[in-house]
Image (cartoon, rainbow, N blue to C red):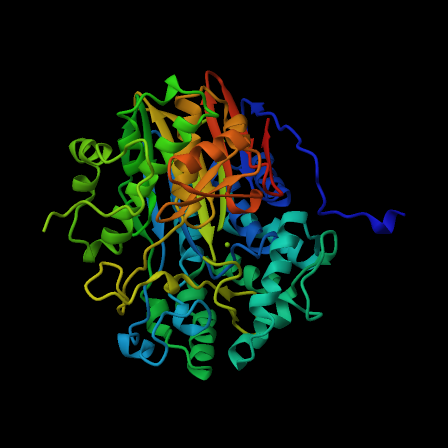
Length: 532
Protein backbone atom coordinates (compact mmCIF):
# COMPACT_ATOMS: atom_id res chain seq x y z
CA UNK A 1 0.00 0.00 0.00
CA UNK A 2 2.77 2.44 0.89
CA UNK A 3 4.27 2.06 -2.60
CA UNK A 4 1.10 3.42 -4.19
CA UNK A 5 1.24 6.79 -2.44
CA UNK A 6 0.61 9.66 -4.87
CA UNK A 7 3.01 12.33 -3.66
CA UNK A 8 1.72 14.98 -6.06
CA UNK A 9 -1.98 14.67 -5.21
CA UNK A 10 -3.41 17.31 -2.87
CA UNK A 11 -7.17 17.78 -3.36
CA UNK A 12 -7.82 19.69 -0.13
CA UNK A 13 -7.08 23.33 0.56
CA UNK A 14 -4.73 23.73 3.50
CA UNK A 15 -4.39 27.04 5.28
CA UNK A 16 -0.88 28.29 5.97
CA UNK A 17 -0.18 30.74 8.75
CA UNK A 18 2.61 33.27 9.05
CA UNK A 19 5.92 32.24 10.58
CA UNK A 20 7.23 34.68 13.19
CA UNK A 21 10.59 35.22 14.84
CA UNK A 22 12.93 37.91 16.10
CA UNK A 23 16.42 36.90 14.96
CA UNK A 24 16.00 35.85 11.36
CA UNK A 25 13.67 34.64 8.64
CA UNK A 26 13.98 32.97 5.25
CA UNK A 27 11.51 31.95 2.55
CA UNK A 28 11.91 30.06 -0.73
CA UNK A 29 9.85 27.92 -3.10
CA UNK A 30 11.65 24.70 -2.08
CA UNK A 31 12.00 23.60 1.54
CA UNK A 32 15.51 22.15 1.22
CA UNK A 33 16.70 25.53 -0.03
CA UNK A 34 15.02 27.23 2.93
CA UNK A 35 16.92 24.88 5.24
CA UNK A 36 20.17 25.87 3.50
CA UNK A 37 19.47 29.45 4.50
CA UNK A 38 18.77 28.46 8.09
CA UNK A 39 22.08 26.57 8.16
CA UNK A 40 23.90 29.79 7.35
CA UNK A 41 22.03 31.79 10.00
CA UNK A 42 22.73 29.18 12.66
CA UNK A 43 26.39 29.15 11.62
CA UNK A 44 26.60 32.85 12.47
CA UNK A 45 25.94 34.17 8.98
CA UNK A 46 23.68 37.07 8.10
CA UNK A 47 20.64 37.39 5.83
CA UNK A 48 22.81 37.82 2.73
CA UNK A 49 24.76 34.65 3.51
CA UNK A 50 21.44 32.85 3.97
CA UNK A 51 19.95 34.19 0.74
CA UNK A 52 22.97 33.26 -1.34
CA UNK A 53 23.11 29.75 0.11
CA UNK A 54 19.42 29.39 -0.80
CA UNK A 55 19.96 30.74 -4.31
CA UNK A 56 22.83 28.31 -4.87
CA UNK A 57 20.87 25.38 -3.42
CA UNK A 58 17.90 26.16 -5.66
CA UNK A 59 20.05 25.54 -8.75
CA UNK A 60 20.15 21.90 -7.60
CA UNK A 61 16.81 21.26 -5.88
CA UNK A 62 14.61 23.24 -8.32
CA UNK A 63 16.46 22.97 -11.65
CA UNK A 64 13.16 23.27 -13.54
CA UNK A 65 13.22 27.01 -12.83
CA UNK A 66 16.83 28.10 -12.41
CA UNK A 67 20.42 26.94 -12.61
CA UNK A 68 24.10 27.81 -12.51
CA UNK A 69 23.66 29.35 -15.96
CA UNK A 70 20.85 31.70 -14.89
CA UNK A 71 20.63 35.46 -14.52
CA UNK A 72 19.89 37.01 -11.11
CA UNK A 73 18.72 40.31 -9.58
CA UNK A 74 18.57 41.51 -6.00
CA UNK A 75 17.54 44.36 -3.72
CA UNK A 76 19.46 44.62 -0.43
CA UNK A 77 18.54 46.79 2.56
CA UNK A 78 21.33 47.76 4.95
CA UNK A 79 19.81 51.03 6.15
CA UNK A 80 19.22 52.06 2.56
CA UNK A 81 18.21 50.10 -0.52
CA UNK A 82 20.73 48.88 -3.09
CA UNK A 83 20.04 47.16 -6.41
CA UNK A 84 22.12 44.76 -8.48
CA UNK A 85 21.40 43.74 -12.07
CA UNK A 86 22.92 40.34 -12.72
CA UNK A 87 21.79 39.90 -16.31
CA UNK A 88 24.17 39.33 -19.20
CA UNK A 89 24.43 40.76 -22.68
CA UNK A 90 23.98 39.09 -26.04
CA UNK A 91 27.09 37.82 -27.86
CA UNK A 92 29.22 40.24 -29.85
CA UNK A 93 28.83 38.08 -32.93
CA UNK A 94 25.01 38.19 -32.87
CA UNK A 95 23.17 40.13 -35.56
CA UNK A 96 19.76 40.15 -37.23
CA UNK A 97 20.98 38.01 -40.12
CA UNK A 98 21.13 35.00 -37.83
CA UNK A 99 17.34 35.05 -37.60
CA UNK A 100 16.54 35.46 -41.31
CA UNK A 101 16.13 31.73 -42.00
CA UNK A 102 13.87 31.37 -38.94
CA UNK A 103 11.71 34.48 -39.08
CA UNK A 104 11.59 34.51 -35.29
CA UNK A 105 13.78 34.22 -32.21
CA UNK A 106 13.89 30.59 -31.10
CA UNK A 107 13.07 29.61 -27.52
CA UNK A 108 15.72 26.88 -27.42
CA UNK A 109 19.28 26.51 -28.64
CA UNK A 110 22.28 28.79 -28.83
CA UNK A 111 20.47 31.77 -30.39
CA UNK A 112 18.44 32.09 -27.19
CA UNK A 113 21.54 32.29 -24.95
CA UNK A 114 23.02 35.48 -23.51
CA UNK A 115 25.86 35.65 -20.98
CA UNK A 116 24.67 34.07 -17.69
CA UNK A 117 25.00 36.54 -14.83
CA UNK A 118 23.99 34.66 -11.66
CA UNK A 119 27.46 33.48 -10.65
CA UNK A 120 28.92 36.99 -10.82
CA UNK A 121 25.94 38.37 -8.88
CA UNK A 122 26.42 35.79 -6.12
CA UNK A 123 30.03 36.79 -5.65
CA UNK A 124 29.42 40.54 -5.89
CA UNK A 125 26.62 40.46 -3.32
CA UNK A 126 28.71 38.30 -0.98
CA UNK A 127 31.76 40.52 -1.38
CA UNK A 128 29.79 43.55 -0.24
CA UNK A 129 27.74 42.06 2.61
CA UNK A 130 28.68 38.43 3.28
CA UNK A 131 30.29 37.39 6.56
CA UNK A 132 30.81 33.64 6.16
CA UNK A 133 33.45 32.27 3.81
CA UNK A 134 32.19 32.25 0.22
CA UNK A 135 32.83 28.50 -0.06
CA UNK A 136 30.67 27.87 3.03
CA UNK A 137 27.60 29.11 1.15
CA UNK A 138 27.93 26.24 -1.34
CA UNK A 139 28.01 23.40 1.16
CA UNK A 140 24.27 22.59 1.26
CA UNK A 141 23.95 22.71 -2.54
CA UNK A 142 26.99 20.48 -3.03
CA UNK A 143 25.63 18.03 -0.46
CA UNK A 144 22.24 17.88 -2.21
CA UNK A 145 23.95 17.36 -5.58
CA UNK A 146 26.33 14.64 -4.36
CA UNK A 147 23.99 12.70 -2.08
CA UNK A 148 20.83 13.29 -4.07
CA UNK A 149 17.48 14.46 -2.70
CA UNK A 150 13.83 13.45 -3.09
CA UNK A 151 12.28 15.52 -5.88
CA UNK A 152 9.44 17.57 -4.43
CA UNK A 153 5.89 17.38 -5.86
CA UNK A 154 5.51 20.71 -7.70
CA UNK A 155 9.04 20.47 -9.10
CA UNK A 156 8.31 16.93 -10.28
CA UNK A 157 5.20 18.13 -12.11
CA UNK A 158 7.18 20.87 -13.86
CA UNK A 159 9.90 18.37 -14.75
CA UNK A 160 7.36 15.99 -16.27
CA UNK A 161 5.75 18.79 -18.30
CA UNK A 162 9.21 19.61 -19.68
CA UNK A 163 9.54 16.15 -21.25
CA UNK A 164 7.46 17.23 -24.26
CA UNK A 165 9.72 20.20 -24.94
CA UNK A 166 13.19 18.81 -24.29
CA UNK A 167 13.18 15.04 -24.93
CA UNK A 168 12.48 15.39 -28.70
CA UNK A 169 15.54 17.66 -29.19
CA UNK A 170 17.96 15.93 -31.55
CA UNK A 171 20.81 18.38 -32.08
CA UNK A 172 24.24 17.43 -30.75
CA UNK A 173 24.25 20.55 -28.57
CA UNK A 174 21.26 19.25 -26.57
CA UNK A 175 22.54 15.78 -25.66
CA UNK A 176 24.51 16.63 -22.47
CA UNK A 177 21.44 18.45 -21.14
CA UNK A 178 19.20 15.43 -21.68
CA UNK A 179 21.77 13.08 -20.12
CA UNK A 180 21.83 15.11 -16.89
CA UNK A 181 18.15 16.00 -16.47
CA UNK A 182 16.48 13.01 -18.16
CA UNK A 183 18.96 10.21 -17.43
CA UNK A 184 16.39 7.43 -17.99
CA UNK A 185 14.85 9.27 -20.91
CA UNK A 186 12.16 10.59 -18.57
CA UNK A 187 11.67 13.07 -15.76
CA UNK A 188 12.00 11.89 -12.16
CA UNK A 189 8.77 11.42 -10.24
CA UNK A 190 7.93 13.02 -6.92
CA UNK A 191 9.89 11.32 -4.17
CA UNK A 192 12.50 9.81 -6.49
CA UNK A 193 16.10 10.61 -5.60
CA UNK A 194 17.92 12.80 -8.11
CA UNK A 195 21.43 14.14 -7.84
CA UNK A 196 24.21 15.29 -10.12
CA UNK A 197 27.94 14.86 -9.61
CA UNK A 198 28.40 17.31 -12.49
CA UNK A 199 26.54 20.00 -10.55
CA UNK A 200 28.63 19.30 -7.47
CA UNK A 201 31.83 19.55 -9.52
CA UNK A 202 30.82 22.89 -11.01
CA UNK A 203 29.70 24.34 -7.69
CA UNK A 204 32.98 23.31 -6.03
CA UNK A 205 34.89 25.18 -8.72
CA UNK A 206 32.82 28.34 -8.26
CA UNK A 207 33.17 28.08 -4.47
CA UNK A 208 36.94 27.83 -4.78
CA UNK A 209 37.52 30.54 -7.36
CA UNK A 210 34.76 32.99 -6.48
CA UNK A 211 33.33 32.94 -9.96
CA UNK A 212 36.50 34.21 -11.63
CA UNK A 213 37.08 30.84 -13.26
CA UNK A 214 33.53 30.86 -14.61
CA UNK A 215 34.04 33.99 -16.69
CA UNK A 216 37.77 34.37 -17.18
CA UNK A 217 39.24 30.95 -16.56
CA UNK A 218 38.95 27.28 -17.43
CA UNK A 219 35.15 27.10 -17.11
CA UNK A 220 34.72 30.12 -19.36
CA UNK A 221 36.92 28.43 -21.92
CA UNK A 222 34.79 25.27 -21.69
CA UNK A 223 31.62 27.26 -22.33
CA UNK A 224 33.13 29.14 -25.26
CA UNK A 225 34.64 25.98 -26.76
CA UNK A 226 31.31 24.13 -26.62
CA UNK A 227 29.54 27.07 -28.25
CA UNK A 228 32.11 27.19 -31.04
CA UNK A 229 31.95 23.41 -31.49
CA UNK A 230 28.14 23.20 -31.71
CA UNK A 231 27.16 26.35 -33.59
CA UNK A 232 26.87 28.88 -30.76
CA UNK A 233 27.93 32.53 -30.85
CA UNK A 234 28.96 32.97 -27.21
CA UNK A 235 32.70 33.65 -26.99
CA UNK A 236 35.31 33.73 -24.25
CA UNK A 237 35.49 37.53 -24.66
CA UNK A 238 31.73 37.78 -24.09
CA UNK A 239 32.16 35.96 -20.79
CA UNK A 240 35.37 37.71 -19.75
CA UNK A 241 33.84 41.16 -20.21
CA UNK A 242 30.73 40.42 -18.15
CA UNK A 243 30.12 42.27 -14.90
CA UNK A 244 27.15 42.83 -12.63
CA UNK A 245 25.72 46.33 -12.61
CA UNK A 246 24.87 48.21 -9.43
CA UNK A 247 21.71 50.22 -10.10
CA UNK A 248 19.48 52.66 -8.28
CA UNK A 249 16.13 51.05 -7.41
CA UNK A 250 12.99 52.81 -8.62
CA UNK A 251 9.82 53.27 -6.60
CA UNK A 252 6.35 54.65 -6.42
CA UNK A 253 4.14 55.40 -3.42
CA UNK A 254 0.83 53.63 -3.06
CA UNK A 255 -1.33 55.14 -0.31
CA UNK A 256 1.76 55.86 1.79
CA UNK A 257 3.47 52.54 1.08
CA UNK A 258 6.66 52.83 -0.99
CA UNK A 259 6.98 49.96 -3.45
CA UNK A 260 10.48 49.39 -4.85
CA UNK A 261 11.57 47.63 -8.02
CA UNK A 262 14.69 47.42 -10.16
CA UNK A 263 14.80 49.70 -13.22
CA UNK A 264 14.75 48.54 -16.86
CA UNK A 265 15.83 46.22 -18.45
CA UNK A 266 13.39 44.53 -16.01
CA UNK A 267 9.60 44.69 -16.13
CA UNK A 268 9.40 45.83 -12.50
CA UNK A 269 8.19 49.22 -13.68
CA UNK A 270 4.96 47.51 -14.84
CA UNK A 271 3.91 46.96 -11.23
CA UNK A 272 4.60 50.60 -10.38
CA UNK A 273 2.67 51.86 -13.42
CA UNK A 274 -0.36 49.79 -12.44
CA UNK A 275 -0.20 50.88 -8.79
CA UNK A 276 0.04 54.54 -9.84
CA UNK A 277 -3.17 54.09 -11.82
CA UNK A 278 -4.90 52.22 -9.00
CA UNK A 279 -3.96 54.83 -6.41
CA UNK A 280 -6.66 57.10 -7.81
CA UNK A 281 -9.35 54.55 -6.97
CA UNK A 282 -10.52 53.66 -3.49
CA UNK A 283 -10.23 49.88 -3.80
CA UNK A 284 -10.85 49.43 -0.07
CA UNK A 285 -14.48 50.51 -0.52
CA UNK A 286 -15.04 47.28 -2.45
CA UNK A 287 -14.72 43.82 -0.91
CA UNK A 288 -11.54 42.04 -1.84
CA UNK A 289 -13.63 39.33 -3.50
CA UNK A 290 -15.72 41.58 -5.73
CA UNK A 291 -16.10 42.18 -9.45
CA UNK A 292 -15.24 45.86 -8.97
CA UNK A 293 -11.91 45.20 -7.26
CA UNK A 294 -10.85 42.57 -9.80
CA UNK A 295 -11.91 44.70 -12.77
CA UNK A 296 -10.00 47.81 -11.70
CA UNK A 297 -6.82 45.88 -10.96
CA UNK A 298 -6.95 44.00 -14.26
CA UNK A 299 -7.55 47.15 -16.30
CA UNK A 300 -4.70 49.02 -14.59
CA UNK A 301 -2.37 46.12 -15.27
CA UNK A 302 -3.49 45.96 -18.88
CA UNK A 303 -2.56 49.61 -19.42
CA UNK A 304 0.75 49.17 -17.62
CA UNK A 305 1.76 46.24 -19.84
CA UNK A 306 0.88 48.21 -22.97
CA UNK A 307 3.50 50.78 -22.02
CA UNK A 308 6.09 48.27 -20.85
CA UNK A 309 5.89 46.12 -23.98
CA UNK A 310 6.31 49.19 -26.17
CA UNK A 311 8.87 51.24 -24.31
CA UNK A 312 11.02 49.05 -22.04
CA UNK A 313 14.26 47.26 -22.86
CA UNK A 314 17.96 47.84 -22.29
CA UNK A 315 17.90 51.42 -20.90
CA UNK A 316 20.62 52.51 -23.34
CA UNK A 317 18.08 52.03 -26.13
CA UNK A 318 14.94 53.47 -24.51
CA UNK A 319 13.46 56.73 -25.81
CA UNK A 320 11.17 57.19 -22.77
CA UNK A 321 12.56 57.76 -19.29
CA UNK A 322 11.51 56.01 -16.11
CA UNK A 323 10.53 59.41 -14.70
CA UNK A 324 8.14 60.06 -17.57
CA UNK A 325 6.50 56.66 -17.22
CA UNK A 326 6.12 56.98 -13.43
CA UNK A 327 4.77 60.52 -13.47
CA UNK A 328 1.60 60.78 -11.36
CA UNK A 329 0.08 63.09 -13.96
CA UNK A 330 0.67 60.45 -16.60
CA UNK A 331 -1.03 57.89 -14.33
CA UNK A 332 -4.01 60.24 -14.06
CA UNK A 333 -4.35 60.41 -17.85
CA UNK A 334 -4.19 56.62 -18.10
CA UNK A 335 -6.70 56.22 -15.27
CA UNK A 336 -9.32 58.09 -17.29
CA UNK A 337 -9.27 55.24 -19.82
CA UNK A 338 -10.71 52.79 -17.28
CA UNK A 339 -14.48 52.49 -17.48
CA UNK A 340 -16.99 49.86 -16.40
CA UNK A 341 -16.35 47.78 -19.52
CA UNK A 342 -13.06 46.00 -20.28
CA UNK A 343 -10.66 47.69 -22.69
CA UNK A 344 -10.54 45.25 -25.65
CA UNK A 345 -6.98 46.21 -26.62
CA UNK A 346 -4.85 48.54 -24.51
CA UNK A 347 -2.53 50.85 -26.40
CA UNK A 348 0.66 52.42 -25.05
CA UNK A 349 0.60 56.07 -24.04
CA UNK A 350 3.94 57.90 -24.01
CA UNK A 351 5.52 59.17 -26.11
CA UNK A 352 3.08 61.27 -27.98
CA UNK A 353 3.70 61.29 -31.88
CA UNK A 354 10.68 28.90 -15.19
CA UNK A 355 12.09 31.51 -11.99
CA UNK A 356 12.83 31.22 -8.35
CA UNK A 357 12.24 33.96 -5.81
CA UNK A 358 13.69 33.99 -2.30
CA UNK A 359 14.13 36.41 0.57
CA UNK A 360 15.87 36.61 3.92
CA UNK A 361 16.09 39.01 6.85
CA UNK A 362 17.91 39.42 10.12
CA UNK A 363 18.33 42.27 12.57
CA UNK A 364 20.40 44.41 10.19
CA UNK A 365 19.97 43.19 6.63
CA UNK A 366 17.11 42.28 4.32
CA UNK A 367 17.43 40.86 0.81
CA UNK A 368 14.98 40.29 -2.02
CA UNK A 369 16.48 38.03 -4.70
CA UNK A 370 15.37 36.29 -7.85
CA UNK A 371 17.10 34.12 -10.47
CA UNK A 372 15.82 32.32 -13.52
CA UNK A 373 16.42 30.14 -16.56
CA UNK A 374 13.54 32.10 -18.19
CA UNK A 375 11.38 29.31 -19.73
CA UNK A 376 11.57 26.19 -17.60
CA UNK A 377 15.00 24.59 -17.86
CA UNK A 378 16.19 27.29 -20.26
CA UNK A 379 17.91 26.82 -23.62
CA UNK A 380 18.33 23.04 -23.44
CA UNK A 381 22.11 23.48 -23.61
CA UNK A 382 24.34 22.17 -20.84
CA UNK A 383 28.12 22.37 -20.99
CA UNK A 384 29.49 18.79 -21.07
CA UNK A 385 30.88 17.38 -17.81
CA UNK A 386 29.41 20.30 -15.82
CA UNK A 387 26.10 21.19 -14.21
CA UNK A 388 25.95 24.47 -16.12
CA UNK A 389 22.64 24.61 -17.98
CA UNK A 390 22.35 27.90 -19.88
CA UNK A 391 19.23 30.07 -19.72
CA UNK A 392 17.29 31.16 -22.80
CA UNK A 393 16.86 34.81 -21.84
CA UNK A 394 17.75 35.95 -25.36
CA UNK A 395 14.41 34.63 -26.59
CA UNK A 396 12.83 37.66 -24.88
CA UNK A 397 14.28 39.97 -27.53
CA UNK A 398 12.05 41.11 -30.40
CA UNK A 399 12.76 41.38 -34.12
CA UNK A 400 10.58 44.51 -34.41
CA UNK A 401 12.61 47.23 -36.08
CA UNK A 402 13.28 50.28 -33.90
CA UNK A 403 11.92 48.68 -30.73
CA UNK A 404 14.10 49.32 -27.64
CA UNK A 405 14.20 45.55 -27.14
CA UNK A 406 15.14 44.72 -30.73
CA UNK A 407 17.80 42.02 -30.84
CA UNK A 408 21.35 43.36 -31.25
CA UNK A 409 24.89 42.43 -30.16
CA UNK A 410 26.10 43.26 -26.64
CA UNK A 411 22.64 44.16 -25.43
CA UNK A 412 20.69 43.10 -22.35
CA UNK A 413 17.25 41.69 -23.22
CA UNK A 414 13.96 42.67 -21.62
CA UNK A 415 13.81 40.79 -18.33
CA UNK A 416 10.76 39.37 -16.61
CA UNK A 417 12.35 38.56 -13.23
CA UNK A 418 11.85 41.24 -10.58
CA UNK A 419 12.57 41.32 -6.86
CA UNK A 420 10.37 43.69 -4.84
CA UNK A 421 10.79 45.59 -1.59
CA UNK A 422 8.53 47.68 0.66
CA UNK A 423 9.31 50.66 2.85
CA UNK A 424 7.15 53.05 4.84
CA UNK A 425 8.25 56.42 6.16
CA UNK A 426 11.80 55.72 4.99
CA UNK A 427 12.03 52.54 7.07
CA UNK A 428 12.25 49.01 5.74
CA UNK A 429 9.19 46.80 5.89
CA UNK A 430 10.73 43.99 3.89
CA UNK A 431 11.25 41.95 0.72
CA UNK A 432 8.59 40.32 -1.42
CA UNK A 433 8.29 38.79 -4.85
CA UNK A 434 6.29 36.55 -7.16
CA UNK A 435 7.88 34.47 -9.90
CA UNK A 436 6.29 33.37 -13.14
CA UNK A 437 7.12 35.36 -16.30
CA UNK A 438 4.31 37.85 -17.10
CA UNK A 439 2.66 36.99 -13.77
CA UNK A 440 5.42 38.68 -11.77
CA UNK A 441 4.35 42.35 -11.82
CA UNK A 442 0.73 41.23 -11.63
CA UNK A 443 1.58 39.26 -8.51
CA UNK A 444 3.39 42.28 -7.06
CA UNK A 445 0.31 44.44 -7.59
CA UNK A 446 -2.01 41.89 -6.01
CA UNK A 447 0.22 41.42 -2.96
CA UNK A 448 0.51 45.18 -2.41
CA UNK A 449 -3.25 45.64 -2.78
CA UNK A 450 -3.86 42.74 -0.39
CA UNK A 451 -1.55 44.30 2.19
CA UNK A 452 -2.50 47.96 1.92
CA UNK A 453 -6.14 47.95 0.86
CA UNK A 454 -7.30 44.78 2.56
CA UNK A 455 -5.05 44.60 5.63
CA UNK A 456 -3.80 41.09 5.00
CA UNK A 457 -0.70 39.63 6.64
CA UNK A 458 2.06 38.26 4.37
CA UNK A 459 0.85 34.66 4.36
CA UNK A 460 -2.81 35.54 3.81
CA UNK A 461 -1.78 37.89 1.01
CA UNK A 462 0.02 34.96 -0.64
CA UNK A 463 -2.83 32.52 0.01
CA UNK A 464 -5.49 34.72 -1.61
CA UNK A 465 -6.82 33.65 -5.04
CA UNK A 466 -5.32 35.45 -8.03
CA UNK A 467 -6.11 36.72 -11.48
CA UNK A 468 -3.79 36.98 -14.48
CA UNK A 469 -4.05 39.21 -17.54
CA UNK A 470 -2.90 37.47 -20.73
CA UNK A 471 -3.50 39.69 -23.77
CA UNK A 472 -6.16 41.98 -25.26
CA UNK A 473 -9.13 41.34 -22.94
CA UNK A 474 -8.23 37.73 -22.11
CA UNK A 475 -7.71 36.84 -18.46
CA UNK A 476 -7.50 33.73 -16.32
CA UNK A 477 -8.68 33.53 -12.74
CA UNK A 478 -7.78 30.95 -10.14
CA UNK A 479 -10.25 28.18 -9.40
CA UNK A 480 -10.72 29.54 -5.87
CA UNK A 481 -12.40 32.69 -7.22
CA UNK A 482 -16.20 32.58 -6.95
CA UNK A 483 -18.37 31.91 -9.97
CA UNK A 484 -20.17 35.22 -9.36
CA UNK A 485 -16.93 37.13 -9.92
CA UNK A 486 -16.17 35.14 -13.08
CA UNK A 487 -19.61 35.83 -14.55
CA UNK A 488 -19.49 39.47 -13.44
CA UNK A 489 -16.16 39.98 -15.21
CA UNK A 490 -17.55 38.36 -18.36
CA UNK A 491 -20.48 40.77 -18.31
CA UNK A 492 -17.95 43.62 -18.25
CA UNK A 493 -16.33 42.33 -21.44
CA UNK A 494 -13.47 40.24 -20.06
CA UNK A 495 -12.79 36.93 -21.77
CA UNK A 496 -12.47 34.72 -18.67
CA UNK A 497 -11.00 31.26 -18.20
CA UNK A 498 -10.82 29.53 -14.82
CA UNK A 499 -7.76 27.40 -14.19
CA UNK A 500 -5.59 25.79 -11.51
CA UNK A 501 -2.82 27.22 -9.37
CA UNK A 502 0.08 26.63 -11.77
CA UNK A 503 -0.68 29.77 -13.83
CA UNK A 504 -0.41 32.25 -10.97
CA UNK A 505 3.21 32.32 -9.86
CA UNK A 506 4.95 31.47 -6.64
CA UNK A 507 5.81 34.13 -4.08
CA UNK A 508 7.50 34.78 -0.78
CA UNK A 509 7.41 37.69 1.65
CA UNK A 510 9.08 38.81 4.89
CA UNK A 511 7.93 41.96 6.69
CA UNK A 512 9.15 43.62 9.83
CA UNK A 513 6.30 44.19 12.30
CA UNK A 514 7.29 45.94 15.53
CA UNK A 515 10.13 43.75 16.86
CA UNK A 516 9.12 40.64 14.93
CA UNK A 517 9.87 39.28 11.46
CA UNK A 518 6.70 37.97 9.79
CA UNK A 519 7.35 35.49 6.96
CA UNK A 520 5.05 33.88 4.41
CA UNK A 521 5.66 31.31 1.68
CA UNK A 522 3.72 30.45 -1.43
CA UNK A 523 1.12 27.68 -0.97
CA UNK A 524 1.34 26.97 -4.73
CA UNK A 525 4.94 25.76 -4.43
CA UNK A 526 7.06 23.20 -2.55
CA UNK A 527 8.74 25.72 -0.27
CA UNK A 528 8.33 27.14 3.17
CA UNK A 529 9.10 30.13 5.33
CA UNK A 530 11.15 29.65 8.48
CA UNK A 531 11.57 32.25 11.23
CA UNK A 532 13.23 32.00 14.61
